[in-house]
Length: 241
Image (cartoon, rainbow, N blue to C red; front, side):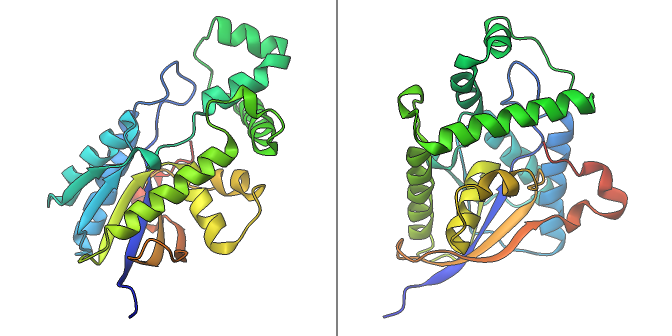
């Protein structure tokens, strides 16, 4: 007997508070982005049987904004396995051997995110920190290892797939890391691909999969990083961080 199949759309949260002491809050633009995504799907009369979100503040706020635009109120489940990895913890572990970063963590200050040079420097630090985390040679420095994060996203998918019983469409409100890992698993990409994918995922972008409800089959990637709803007069809503 063939397992029931359905569609799962992963939506990245709205713009958060990059460079601020508390990243886990939507910016005003982030709320506007997700409200527009909801309105866009409502106008297309795209049905949603269930919304699943991570339990971070930016996930909850994104769902609230999305529902304001969407109008209808589908059931919402909270699944912490869809959370992003703790990027600050990953950078903090990398900073152990970096005196300037240790000093910043000791006395953190808001970053100038409008400066291209500073933004480039931040992204380079992030890349080096993530690569250190992925190599697995310093796992004792992390509360959640790269392998642990990968296994958590696999659990998130298994849980979501079982929710397809009796449903056709699920929307998951999550973050760039779980979306990138999902694409990598579907296409059998190496772990080095995560950073490349992650940097190209727009806030409020949609990545869609076809999958079975048995919790075992590998989801099939249908589309990556849909962002047509941020074109034309809505281009001011397009952000990557």
